Amino acid sequence: MRKFIVRITIVLLVVILLPVSFYFIKQLTNLSENEKIVKNVFDKQIQTILFTLNQTSENIISNWINRLDLPPEADLVIMKGIVNNLLQNNKSIYKVELFNIQNNQTQLTFSRSDSLADYTFRPDRGKLEELKSHMKDGYQRIESFPQGQVTILYFLFKNRGNNVAGILFINTKTFIEQNLGASFQQVAQDAFNIQIVETDGDRIVYSVGQESGSEMLNAHKEVAWYLPGIEFRIQLRAATIDSLIKERSQKDIFTLIALIVIVILGLLFLIISIRKEIILAEMKSEFVSNVSHEIRTPLALISMYAETLLLKRFKTPEKEKEYLNVIHNESNRLSEMVNRILTFSKMEKMKRLYHFSEVDINELVDEVIYTFGPHLKTMNVECVKNIECDIPSMQADREAITECLVNLIDNAIKYGRASEKKIWIKTRRHENSIIIDVEDNGIGIAKKYLPFIFDKFYRVTKGNLAHQAKGTGIGLNIVKQIMDTHNGKVIVKSKPGEGSCFSLKFPINK
Image 1 (cartoon, rainbow, N blue to C red):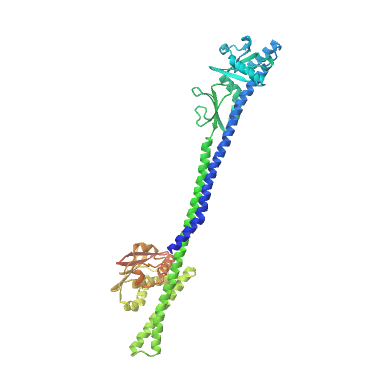
Image 2 (image 1 turned 120 degrees about the vertical axis):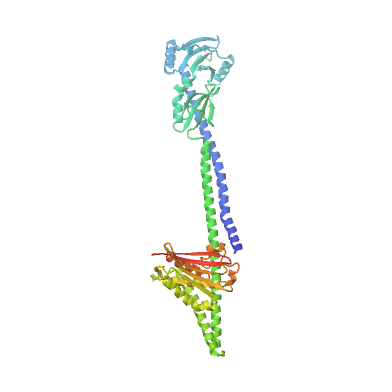
């Protein structure tokens, strides 16, 4: 049987666990690939957002330059009006200068009445030549230069013959708050934290989100195009994409592991069920074999003695009577065996009917012992009766309780000692219970077998018990089912070599 179970287990492992393991590995691989795809997509989206922020600052500055880029012949009043309007609407601009590249002199200066307006700056000649080169190629480039809290932007005008440079002095922090703040708020919404940080010292200039007062770890960074020394930083408000991917991956992995565990548990349950069915099938087969053997012995004796009587091969009337007694006893034994099997069959089909009535336990025990008297005498078994007098009657099925006692006494005889067999039958009252004890001085039962002896078809097949007496393995199961019907219990105490004691415990008034 073990080899058969091992083969079934291996087949089930191959059929179930291998595909599940393959699926598990494949899912883990897909999760890893999906993580990379999601991270790449997210990184590209973040870069797009950072690019948009820089593009916004470029659009604002380009708009200022386009408004200032008037032809040389433009009226000075118009120029002043445009610059004053620009200064009025943009508090971040402190000073606007038009610088002549050829004579290295300032043509026009417009400034606020502010200390920051005293800043002066002259573009590098080499940078100006680069701007001219870009302008010839059709590209108007803007250069920036940091000077304290001011950012200086300089560029060439398209409409002034590449000889006049414009210089804007802007307050970096004010420019970020006034001109870029709305765009940052729109981008951040409830999803992102955004910070504008001075790279020299990591001082936070402007921030949007819950992390406004602290440094953002693992944030995506981008250098500002027109604000030297300034860095844009952005990250998810709830968590980083890495942590979100990790969390999602962990959930998926835990789900897969849970499925694997469920499959393994189901597989174990299936293997255990198959094993139980195989064991039950073996026990049924052994039951049929034992029943056949049990029936064959009395039939052989009945046939032999009946033939002896028919052929009149007895010498004296005493022998004739002896042969008739053997036939009678074996017929009763055969009848009891068949009745026991029929009773078990009815119980299995839930068709046995119980008839409860008032039963005097002491009287019932006396009747059973009297019935067993001849058999006990034949088997040389001493029976000791110990009955308490104050035991009340109870509601029970008289026939069923009798059957329990018969089974227990029969087992006590079967598994008793080879000589000097002795049985003690006691009735007693303990608290709210009536107890009948059937004790013997037989070979006893090992502790490891006690939990199984009430299972159907179970018989101990090791040691002396296997050879002491034959049986069907249903007697004790019948006793247990009868006691369950009476809301009672059957309790066993046994030690190898010292005998066994089976106790029928009935609750009073139930």
